[in-house]
Length: 497
Image (cartoon, rainbow, N blue to C red; front, side, top):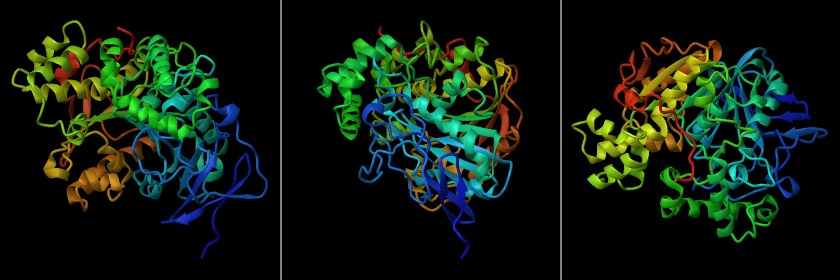
């Protein structure tokens, strides 16, 4: 039996394990535990250690505000990462750094959906990162730096720059990737000065347009602090609240956001109470405005979304099939771009019933148009963008989920037999599922390795898009009607009405 792999990092030696033809190293700290006086502060550099640190188990999960089963809370060394590499003794391998952030309230790098085996077999070094989310990462506190979750991600990318060569990776060929809030994180990193030079390429699936102004973020944080009994919306006051209790309280708080609709407006439809803040310092403006205004440089970007982004939420909530004309009017009035977006949707989709209108405007506002707009803005900023839309229908529940949000991730990672993959596929992967997975996974590997996804780059005149289905092809952007409605309307930060 071969000796278990060892690697010397800048902080000390780690020992991982061989697994399915590649080496894995888990739970490596890239910053100190953000507890005690470090709670709600910027990440502090990790401490060095003597001897060999065992890196065979995932680090403790960060406090989550979503019902993801991470096991019981165990320790506070949340800021860790995992490395899967084809060969620690190699040199110059392309690197994918994955940010497993969902809704800005979860970050579970131990989810089997993100297993690096298939990508490592294809020659990539894969790094997955735990970072602070929810109140720990994004509560807007006067005595703490904002957007601490982004600061964690930058610290992890800096760790990769310093250490990835020891795992066989090339620090000059780093791609940062994510889906949903992870993709929103990637979009933010494109524009943040401290992140410049830490990665070369980016993958962003289902990019959300979730940002708050300081005024709204301050009011929401104050309401949340009052809910948990803190005397003030400050780090000093919230330090007395146990982290997992704080996360659980945020779950309940988010579930009741609709009660604040008149006061807080559009953010109450997002399901995310605490999201990144356009603070003018760490995150100076939205990615779309920074790129289109030439205040950020474009890079090589692979962006995309699913056709039926909202379907997952409507089915899982039990609302699918219940939407009425009033629901459609409310959704259009709240989410369509103003002042004429609601009328434009009715004119653009004249045959659509209430359910289709609700699903279309939610999918567009939350994910599809921010993703397409990011590809377009990156191109305008001098970068090269590759755009895709996933149109293959998930087999689960008789196809009721459609081509839904998050279906693309087990396809891209090749983790079709993971719990999430099985839930979406409805059992054993079909030949169609394997084929679509091979197409998307191959695009990832090509892009991370060469910067070319394998189809024509996006151009504003042609808008060529890879449509991922049983028979994939490249054609003009399939959601042209929605694109026209949203033309000139990039996602704006949520604000007080």
